[in-house]
Image (cartoon, rainbow, N blue to C red; front, side, top):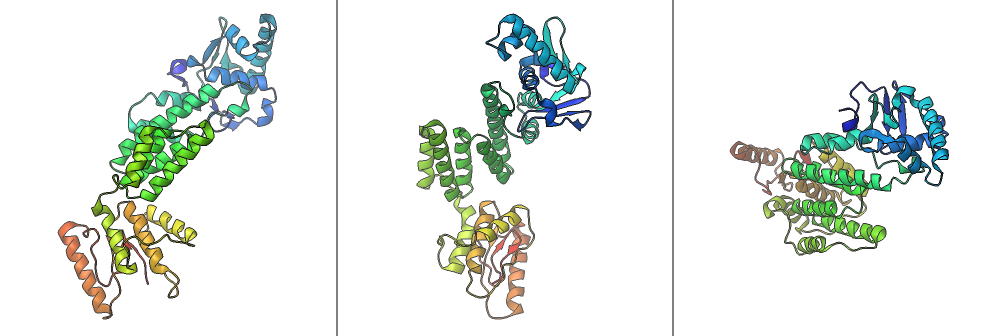
Length: 370
């Protein structure tokens, strides 16, 4: 690809990171920060790295770096900056023939690689590139005004994250939601990403989370732009609050029947005082834990916590089987096991929300003991 695509043709001897932080390696050895005491060398490196083709005429570089200097003084400053830069990263890293400065092909710069990958429309290619986006352009490392470059790269990250999330939604809803969460973390004012995340949360049965996402979007726009969410976002929010957009009833039925059977209400009140336990259990569910047992003294809220775990699992697509312990000892457990085995033999998975006597709340292999 060379200078045209922003990535070197040869094996990179110099690796430059400008996304998230400023870091340079030569031949695999990090260059200490103290080597960059002369800021004009850093400014020149950033200027060339972000220029299309990674090349710029000397006169233009001098004008951009020292706009208040006359031509002769600017040329002298540029000569010294080029000397300082080559001293740090090597003479062959920045070429200067025919009045043009150009970054050599052996220099790999993460922003160039990211830019090139963003031209793809293949979700897999984009997903790999997005994983290597380590943060916004490190504009604080240079005296140049690189706001436009930072915003362009950030916008590319958000737009591509939305494209990949739409592709992932078909097969991996949790991954799609996680990707959109990172997008709005990178750019809290990305209203389109907020809106897509709101919709996906609502369609996953996570209505409360979808409402909270709207509030996060609204607050971010107010704080950063002194603006309100647009009509499309507000219309979506209204549809979520009035229940027009929600997870299909069959998907919600399992955990709601669990709540009804064990707590006497299909929509129990908020769980309080169990944030750390719920966070640990949610992580276990997302990591595919085979079995979860909730044990403790009578009356401390194990059943309420188990129902909340069932809700979390159900929102992530799990089949919920619920029941309550009955008198009868082992025979009750054996009967429940036979019923589950018959269900699995018929459909490979138990019917959503089926009540099975003798079985404690179950969420995709996670069990809560009473």
